Length: 128
Image (cartoon, rainbow, N blue to C red; front, side, top):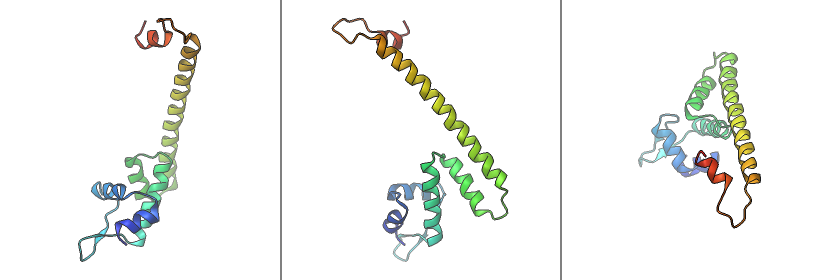
């Protein structure tokens, strides 16, 4: 199947498919006319990658997950370890975002929002 059909089937854009080919994640064959020719297995791999990316896995993590998926002798503990590490990254990001939210909420409530030039938000950003 050509890149347009593969993009339609996977919900990924053609640019993404070209990028995945460029970095060696999914390597489609070539038709006689030189166009990319995706097999049904490759479309399945692309759908797998789309789902993994939607969960926030990095390209490096996706490469590892795809490798584990294709390895029928894999240990599920390896997959679990990778997913658990990613979950830790998500939890750290949530914590960071909560801290940012708290700080910004405090600064907004401290700002009068009137015609005066003094502003605690700008003072904080300036390190005062």
